[in-house]
Length: 71
Image (cartoon, rainbow, N blue to C red):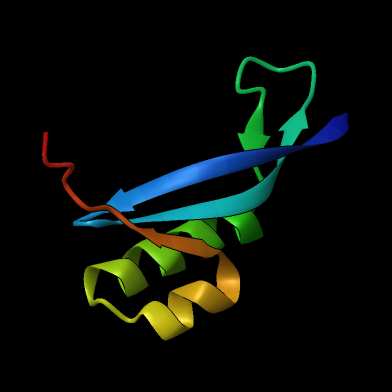
């Protein structure tokens, strides 16, 4: 079993969080997969973005605000 770093993007409303996680690669059909802790972290960040708790989300990830571009 090997682990490799990966960046996941979570999009909620007009916010995006960039989260560093580790993907676990093994010899089974479910590979690659997240650890339980990383999956819980992604859920926690998603919930924080939904309630617009940017302070909490930014403790766990890099948070960006999306704005429309006027052409």
